[in-house]
Amino acid sequence: MTADGKTPDTPDTPDTPDSKTATPAAGPQARAATLLRRPKLWLLPTVLTGLLALLLSLLYMGGIVNPQGDLHDLPIALVNADRGKPLPNQEQNLGTQITRAITSDSTSDKAQWRTLSLGQAQDQLDSGKVYGALVIPADFTDSVAALTTADATARPTMTVLTNPGKGSLGSSLASQITTAAAHQASQTIGKQLTAAATAVGSTQKLLLADPVNVATKVGHPLGVHSGLGLTAFYYTLLLVLAGFLGGNVISNGVDTSLGYADNEIGPWHTRLPTVPVDRTQTLLLKMGMTAGITLISVSLIMLATVGVLGMDATHLPLLWIYSYCAALAVGLGVQAINAAFGGIGQLVSMFVFIVLGLPSSGATVPLQAVPGFYEFLSHFEPMRQLSDGVRAILYFDARGDAGLTRAWTMIGVGAAVGLLFGFAMTRYYDRRGLKRLTPQPA
Image (cartoon, rainbow, N blue to C red; front, side, top):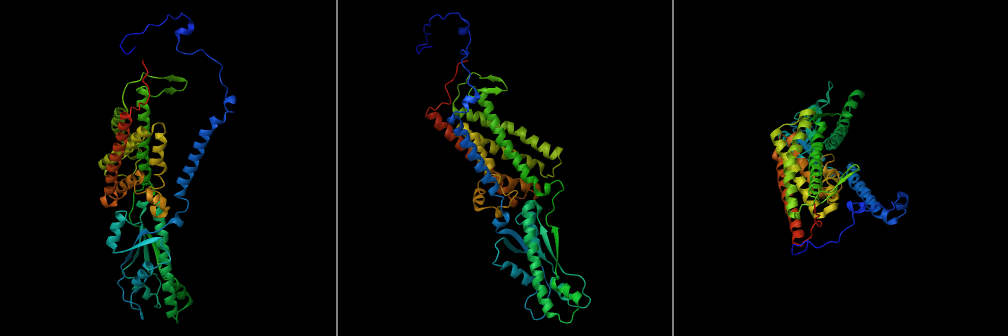
């Protein structure tokens, strides 16, 4: 077809078998052994595969390889409920002395001790603001003083409270720190008592040397189907994967249906006629489909995890709405990245949402126990924001101060950034006349 709408004359073509098929005449076929000797064929896949393996190893393992060494400022509550009178020749009771010794210890920065009342500590356990607590009881000094009497048999007890809702590793780290602090306090008190007690038997001396019993209790219990505090992380991972994989499947499916990508299933190959459509309209179509299909994927995730597997979950309507918005925000971000970066978009979005997101999520390893690089990423990486909201809904009664308010805010920010970035890039490409490919006739 010429510019004036007329069909140009074409020479007659002999009616031969070769002219009746679009398939070119078969020529010599290349062999794998020959192609393997081409250095250029090896170069790009080798470099990219090696680089990916290196980055994945460093990024994944770098966040978990040394949590004890990286640990700092882990929030732990310290409750001094001791109301006893000071022991002879002492100005303060033992609870006050222990509190001052623990909070003024400058030799370790692993814990961020928060001196709270018992009610305040329980509230922070219930909102996920602390990883554990050490409680000195009201009769502590009086119970220690009773050990110096002849009929002393029972040791006073300090209680370590754990918070499995903050993750099994974080709760374990806090338990180790609080237990060590309690035992250190017991040894210090034991030295004072042993020095003061001169006329006691050997059995009582053993009791006085380590006078304090340390009991561990769950400060904020979870249900038996909560994976020891890990269901929030895995549920968040499902939402991210639903958005990431769903976004890429939708993107590839739309490109195939509109004729901008080939469709290969086993030995069958098809290429549909190209539908003339610009980049902006294509992105709008993909995002609209993402919004619709995500409804199905999120509903199935909840059906499988809560209905079939029996995962402990409350606030189900809120969990469903939150899950949909979270997965949708990821899906919109994937579509925007794919539209901006083209063929490598899937790789870029994998790093944004998964590779960098997992070690900086704080869901398995506390952010206080990862290197500073991951703490920096946690301020904006999507998985951290989403996991805080899921954890608040599943474990902390959907309290806003448990992370849900911030999670909702970051979901809105993330979705807005995805929309603005995606459409800004496609409109730029369209204005520059950068078409995806030349449309092919049917």
